[in-house]
Length: 394
Image 1 (cartoon, rainbow, N blue to C red):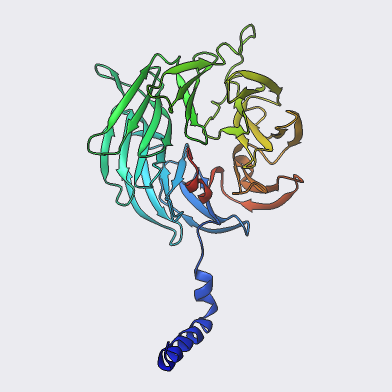
Image 2: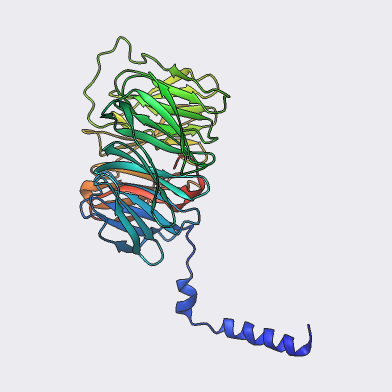
């Protein structure tokens, strides 16, 4: 470098050093960000997970009574799926909706493919899956859930798989489908029939190998090993409630917030006050943990050391923490009325919990169970952090 070029470089450095503080402050990474759904207002609250603070709000997102969110690979955009069939692309820096479309009449969630180019929505009405370009939200594929002439099924349990693939279940058809969108204009769909009565939700294991659908119409789950050359569905935990009187189901459990910790999976037992423990090598039951009520979410801390459980009414003001080594309940907490969702910070040192009827989100230390912050949020429900962008099945 000659003297003249060196002086230019020093001048540039000096100019950078004198940038106003506001310009530096405006440069915010997306790894700290997340969103909370204000379900009654149809609004998104953007939060900073390190500072445990509220950043701003985004209005005009429609019916968010059963909202779900996925993120672009860089964490800059949140794709919000509303119950009314709306799909919105929100910029988390500008706090603006970049595009919003009405893609169905009744929708309950979606997924984004591994390379971040395709966003898929699962629909109740008219049924089926619609796939969109993640940049423009233009429709690129329509996958009807027709299982008999003129009969369309509600779709549940939509997850992303390695590659441009998605798996989903048909509630009304007792069926699992796997769609390959390598060429969006010519999607290929595998059908797996007779998998069990009324699959209601599903998960994919962290390695992308197993797709597991819970069954509402009977005790048991259906599992599909996607690493096989010709995958076949088999049943696991069939009849786990055999000999016991079934209880009324007050709220459907969720498998999307799966809990896989080491060699064990922890799953909610439908209509029972139990968490089922399953060995992920044999997929056999290895234990049951009595809990305070009917589990809704059973979620593992990122390191797998704890599992946190919330419950349906009348126990929906409670959260219990399970030690995954001893299978004992470590703690019972009361973070507020109507606990609807929990979300761990990326490395699990804290968990954020929404209490809808107390209009509060609590941030709780997972080692001490001490509340670190309480944020005022109107009727909060789902909590979603941008760290999900790097995780399969989220």
